[in-house]
Length: 214
Image (cartoon, rainbow, N blue to C red):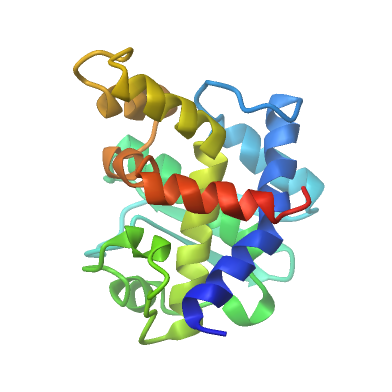
């Protein structure tokens, strides 16, 4: 099995985790057209996974890094978020690190976050949706990072909402600002809104859910 196929398989196995959190946040199985409450997600994961999570906004100098998670000991984690990063990046970074906590296995924890992230930057992050994806470099570390990103995207902006919103953008219901309106509504980076509403991204996520028993 190739790296891309393995990564997709990893996502299928972890999608029920995303649905579990969504159901606990929203109180039902249907996606809610609203901004995901980050503090509530953190509280739910603390309670349901019986872990201790400290989320800190800190100054640190990293060219690429917005956030990282450190496992201090078994069941104890610290999420560090760069305090001068844009608000929407801090939101997404926190959720991505939460997805590492609930989705990573023992061998996935990386002690060199900056190095791992540097290995995937400069590539179009949408290439996960390309079946010829070549992870390269530190395969496991990069795969873990990409998996957490895709999990976070689905958690913070459910694909079912994306499908409806894409239609609304095409039909002009959201006015001339379109995706910028969606970015503001859901509190997500504009680049992410562009990436996850692409037809191939939506097709892949819909296909993953079709093979997943959530």
